[in-house]
Structure formats: structure tokens, C-alpha cells
Image 1 (tube, rainbow over the protein chains, first blue to last red):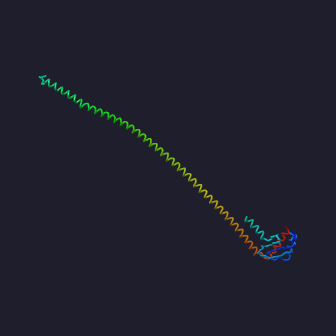
Image 2 (cartoon, each protein chain N blue to C red):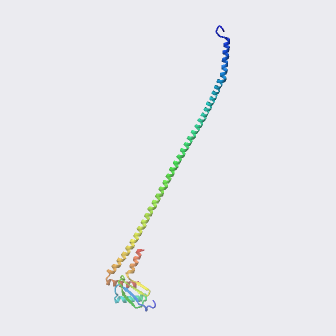
Image 3 (tube, helix red, strand yellow):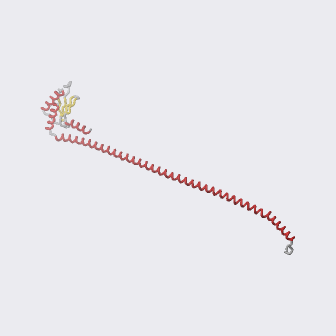
Length: 77
Length: 163
């Protein structure tokens, strides 16, 4: 990831994260995905259990919604 | 002769008269009658001959007529046989065609019914999945407490870090 400080990463979850979770997430983004940028946390009830991360064009869906959609596609095809 | 009462002169005259009468009768009566009888005989013979000829001709005509009738009967019989044969063949062809068409209609109906059934089943499956998905989403949103939501987030973080 280059120029990763010019934009912030946006984390959206259904409930507000506590400090411990936020710290663990920031550490994970940095170590696992090389994202060392400011993180903006948002709460959206539409996110179904879990969270999503958007950074520039990169998107991580760690919600149950993704698995549910995958299961739905599998059952329909 | 005189004793017998016969006079020779008179006898001679009577004989002469008789002969004269014979000559006259022969010339003016007997010959025409004979000629007439001969002509009549000829006419009768000719008539008989004609009748015989006509009889032969009639027999031939009758035979020919019978032959024609027999031939006509035979031809009529052949026509009837042929017509029956053609009618039977037509009936068989019509029956076969009708059976084939009926079979095609039944197969098409069965096929259409099968397609319709499959389409309905597929549609039902799709609707069921969509309904189940919507129900799960609704249940998860309504049923999960904030603590459970947080636990899930923590679990997800842990899972990503371990993967």
C-alpha cells in the first residue's frame, strides 16, 4: 500500500466498537493489509453482524452479510 | 255306240271341247297359279332363310350381350374391390395419422407440463431462498444484542488475523 496516509480508512459496524476492538483492528490493518492511515469509525444498522473496511478502492467485508449473500447465490444457482 | 246312246259326233265335239278347255285352263289358270305358288314358295324360303339368319344373329347378339354383361359385372366387381381396398388403406392411413397427431399432442402437453412444473419449482426455490435470506437478515438484525454484535466483531477480527 503506497501513499496510505493521504486518506483515512472507513470502518462501518452495526454497533460502536470499544477501544480495545478499535486498537486490535488498527493493528490488524497495519500488519495484515499494510494500511497505516487514520481510521474513521461509523455505525450503520444495515451492516449485518461484523464490520466492513473501505480504504481507497480496497474493500473488506467482514460481516455476515457477505456470507449470507454467497450462500444465497449458491442456493439459487 | 248308237245302242249305248252315244253319238260319235257329239262325243268328238265334247272331247274337243274338253281338250280345248284343258288348254285354256292350263294357259290362263294353271300356269299363273303355279307361278304364284312358286313365287310364294320362294318368298317363304327366303323368309325362312331370313328368319334363320336372324335367329343366328340374335343368338350372336345375345351371346355378345351376355359377354358384355359378364364383363361389366367383372369390371364392377373389380371397381368395388379396388374401392374397398382404397377405402381400407385410407382408413388405415387416417387412423395412423390421427394416432400420430394425438401422440404428438400428448407428448407436447406432457413436455409443456414438465417445463411448466420445472419453471414453477425453480421459481418456488428462488422465492424460498430469497424469503429465507430476508428472514435471516431480519432475525439477525432484531435478535442480536449489542454485546453479541461486539462478540461477532471480535470473533471476525480474530479469524482474519489467524487466516
